[in-house]
Length: 425
Image 1 (cartoon, rainbow, N blue to C red):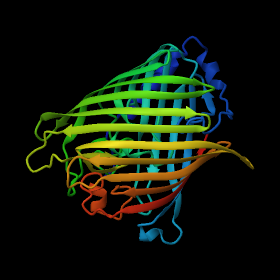
Image 2 (image 1 turned 90 degrees about the vertical axis):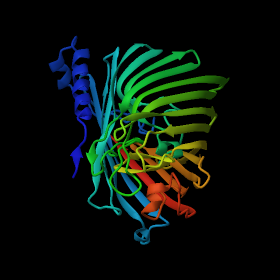
Image 3 (image 1 turned 180 degrees about the vertical axis):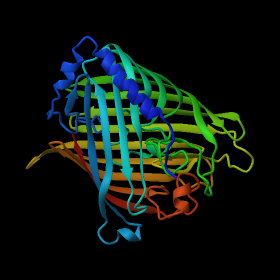
């Protein structure tokens, strides 16, 4: 049965609106809200997920997006006759504007699956936070926000992200407080997270969420789990080297540590991760390199393996190897094409691998070759994605459950051709 697992999104939205009203208290609120504006000219792909917000209502900027997706999967028989074009995502976002020093951002998303389960839909909070901006170099954020780890905002150029996303180390969001400070060419982010962002509306027990976390698994073989994240601390420091003419290289180090609480044993284990990265911009080129080492030491009950943990997002849990090393490499180039309304195309290739410590676990790999471009408010990504021992590139059943752990059926590479088109309003 579908239920809304947490009131967190509603509470954050109420706080967000209240903060906006408070921040605008020196203005005539009635007059401000009567002047709703439409049709801003921000470029739709200024940032992949920094949405265009065309409606202004007092201190609030309100907007959203709708995305359609075409997919052809080499391993799926029901895609043999031309693939599938369907609704992907609907999102609504609200930002505070003109309310300095109070700042904030909120986004909620709806998803629907098709071939796999035509009646299956789920929705959840993407992020929701309020903050205080001390000046142009220092701010603090409270709520559900991006965890400071690795290359930010993304370690990837493509629609599928890189493998760290699928184990909670790329574009991850949790509930806590984050300090951000710029010191010349040095950027420092420190954070404490009380817990994860929560699970929202869907069929799963604990996996209706945007980013991957340890979850309480569902009652089918291989994904029974009682672990949750608690008291996580993060530190990320990045140094930018300026080479002139707009060229620059960011070098960074990220640290993460948290408790793992098991509700069955009522004991606490722990988790660590350390990452190093390079994010370089050289003319029309961008290069991304990242290495991550992680480990989970959970206090599981008897009969539950310590060789893997259960993680979940998008309303479905799966196993992830408890210890491993991840390597990431991506490159992109902007091409001036002037093809009708398309002026620039970004071409890219992103590769990542999860090397699992356990000797009888098969490693997981992913490679995505693609391009992206914008036309007005439309943003399109065209990807040829390949995965090996990857739950999102699988045939069925056990391949989903243990692709990122044992990968016991080691089926080799599978390919997916994907086109995602988003309209930002």
